[in-house]
Amino acid sequence: MEITKLQFTFSLNLDQVNLIINSLAKLPYEQVADLIIGFRQNAVSTIQAAEAAERESNQAQQPANDPVPNAPADAAPVAAEETPAEPKATELPSETEPANPA
Image (cartoon, rainbow, N blue to C red; front, side):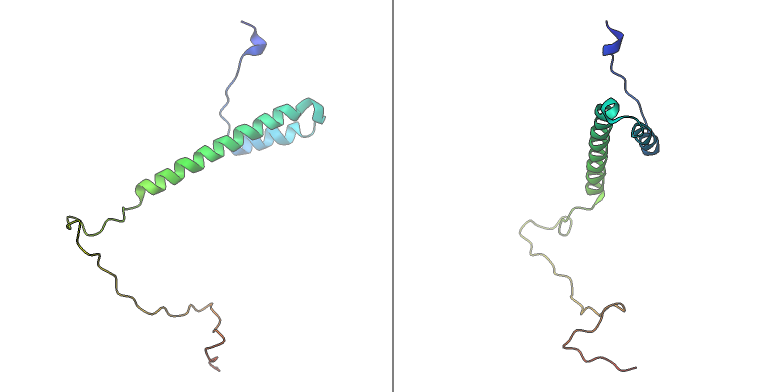
């Protein structure tokens, strides 16, 4: 086995990866371009996998949109009462609403 063909796996946090990439950026591009590209590809795939796992975890924690438990399948859904929304304090009155002089 040729030792130069060995593949190494490191576990680094984001600050450590940024430190390595910033250090490599100070060297001539031709010497470090492939290494920086490899770091970036690995970082992107790691971040995407973590985001996907987080989305799956969040979806698993959300309650199902099941109607009333143990209700017959042909039961009609019950609508929630609607209440008129009041404008938020940060909203400006619309042009159809008169401004309240203070």
